[in-house]
Amino acid sequence: MNGVPVTAASRALYSCHTCGLLSRGADKGADMGGVVHCPRCSAELHFRKPDSVARSWALLIAAYIMYIPANLLPIMETSSLFGSQDDTIMSGVLYLWYSGSWDLALVVFVASIMVPLLKLIAMTLLLVSVQRRSVWQPLQRTKLYRVVEFVGRWSMLDIYVVTILAALVQIGSLATIKAGPAAVAFGAVVVLTMFSALQFDPRLIWDPLQKERPGHE
Ligand SMILES: [Zn+2]
Image (tube, rainbow, N blue to C red):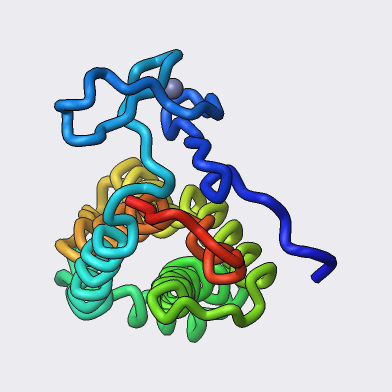
């Protein structure tokens, strides 16, 4: 690290969460309990996203909980003349693997089991390190956050696969295929993790490296 840079917060400047304007904030009367507003879009200003860590944790824990039914309940219900079959994500992966489509099995395994779990673990790591005011590898942690945020929008791949399969099989009309309850849970995991990442304020990673800092909200 070559020198600690000056931050807006250390100069008592606010960055607007909505329009991005950097300002000292316009006081709308001193009786408003010290609430400062953006002079351009009049959104409430904070040095850091308010209750970022607590909200991020809450959403993350909810995502962890939903991860369990997402993997234990059937994601796909197939019924045909020869009976019906429920598949969880893992049994689907195994089916693909043993029927010779190892490449597809690998894609589904990585996209539906590995990536969501790694994202949960990454967010946990970020939150724990921020709460402990850790100064360990801030640049790497910021990059990790960026990856988690970027990967979010690609995580619906599994739902997409089920949708495509359902459409393909319906055309055949010999069998019907439905998304099972795990599909809802899986969608919840993805969305909750995305919201958790959105609530997280990556500037908190850098704050412990700052020499002095006025109180943040
Ligand atoms: Zn603004």
